[in-house]
Image 1 (tube, rainbow, N blue to C red):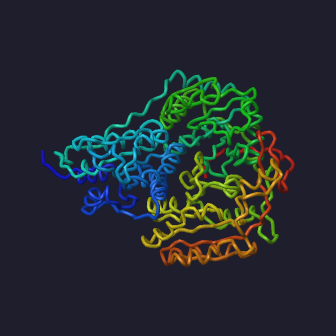
Image 2: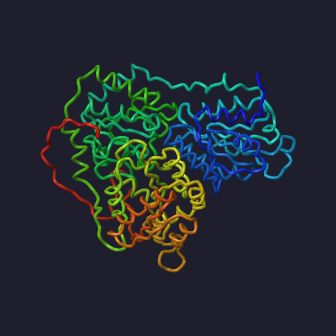
Image 3: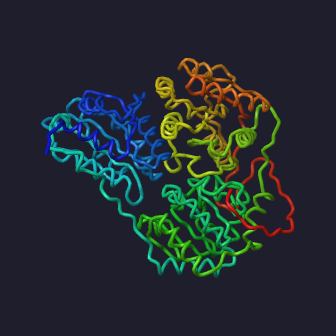
Length: 582
């Protein structure tokens, strides 16, 4: 068995695991790994401006490719800066591996410079952490880390490497090494049959597509199941785009924030709900008693402890989402011929048409809803959207129309401000030919804007669309209605102390344009797409929006408070059509 520097073996393993780009910042305690990276012909390294940005970029790359993302940092604060990114990936089930350097073993317990027990610190926000104390263990630790990141409910892993361990050699032959097999649990066919029976016996069934279906790349089969049984589909927020927004069976979104009026109304009328790969998040369910009602729930998830975590299902099934959907489709085809549209299945499209929120505002300052109307009309269905947390994210979930799986990404559970700027880098590198658009708020943009320089340096073009209201607006709204105050949330608009975002972009050698009127939005988007791709840099379209516009939300899905005009249209006589995918 040939001997080689152990970090060269690590690089061979990264290449073999499908990694072609890593994000990090070199430091003294991780330089042996960087020395090995210089010899790689397959892996590109991007030097980010903050280790949190490295984790978010790796996160974006993992989401769009379906592979395991990699972020690298040195010892001490590099690892602690990665905690937010690890937490984000844990919450959204995204597989990444973070690699940190560490002080040499003899001084780990002596308060050495930048020596911190990052493996213990990161445990609550990872699937597993390692502090590798023997050089010979490193190759198998890395193989196991990639397997753990992928297997079951995907998630993050951290590997901490003392400097003296990195400097060692190891007997390693890449020709006889391979990724470890990932186990995918198959569903119990008896439970699958029972689930189909419950759907067939129901009067008003719904299929709920969770983010796990998206991660398993099972959206096509899921839609085929819905079409065969003619059952409306309601995706969770993490599954936006899993069924086309214009599909006859798409019922809209359910939730107390990122929801549609038709989606909540349809769900409240249902009697049986089959849920796959979702976790019943609190912003989705709201008041659980209202959410549950008298309806029955079938819950399928790859992670056994997800079943019953929020409330007990009437039928729980542990299985990989893709294997479960394939089994459901196979059994459904055995048990019943393809069904024709029913008055219930036709309610999906009918409610989407009849119960809407107004978007075509012409006022100045621009209403936020108008921004999303322009985005829907301007960008094609292949555009990939990236967004984080704030009122702009809630409006995005309420108003954006997404038509294809893997074209809408959001940090749904952790909600870290600043996620979009580095995540867009990872998404664009993972899918270089796609048009990537980050929808950002003025406050979130400021958290990790340093990574604009990373994008410029590495010629990573994408478009940022900013809704600038000069507020921490997601906090301003509950302050207003729950606490009757406006305190600590004003960060500047036209009052002399708000940032000039166009100048910030230009200072980063990127592009920026400010929009003040609704009719300026489309020309600005055209400019941003054209010039961003021509110059290979990010381009920002900053849209000054109405400061006091609030988002529609509520404590329960039956009590959403509408803050702006809504559209209620009369029912039409249903026309029998066969529902097909876009």
